[in-house]
Image (cartoon, rainbow, N blue to C red; front, side, top):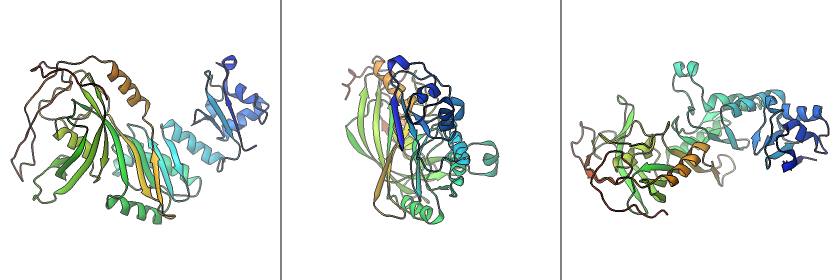
Length: 362
């Protein structure tokens, strides 16, 4: 039998994992149950179990799988997979050329210098150990911010990396994000278009005059997923270009910075009581052409626990004092001194002029 699956019944709620496994015909003993866990063949609710979790008590309804014919479950790969899981990483897809990873917030995609290499963990570091046990390499094809969660793609050899990097450089992949922003965004869909460049001194993306040196067209298409009565909007944003920090800057420029944002905030912006340990931004899906086989492949990462909890919390918060403020947004002073005034409706903490009732939730 290549795979055994059992859903923990009420009568076995609280049983140890190895005890539940013993009840499977293909296992039959506590010793064989532990061997299955130790060789990386046991999953609970889709998560690989580490050797230390053989005694984990299981709740009713937990789905336990034993994948007997799972390839590459030798000792070295098993150790590397345990390290992936320990870092909160999940493999969404893997073949001979490409690996799609679900990255948790707080972990770098890759380090940028030797100091970071010594002091910081990264997706590439963890994935390199896992792929190395299979005789493959880990090549970064694109990045997402440390505090952004979601899909990241890696290549397993030089040729695949070259093809995928060229796709990203030419803005060919379809990259879709989900985010939560301050305020009630007007309209149900639209396009953000700006000229931007990376400021090496400030280490941030800035908006500039389109005629300025180094100006890059920066475009994203957005649609509203939900408006919360508390003065927050959930958006789906597709990157038409792929600038670093693009969504964070473009949302803020329109008076709707992301929840949890610390860098891209309008001057004197009041974030109120909606405080998060990271920006509410998730790389929902990426679609690319397979680097060796051709044909489109799409990878999707479900929302992590913190953003699912956020959405539930927002749904329970009452409407705020709705405020309208005049805001001025700076453009790079070296290139243009123009400003723009933008109204803001939403979840600021300070009192302001009342601007009507909260919108209905979508």
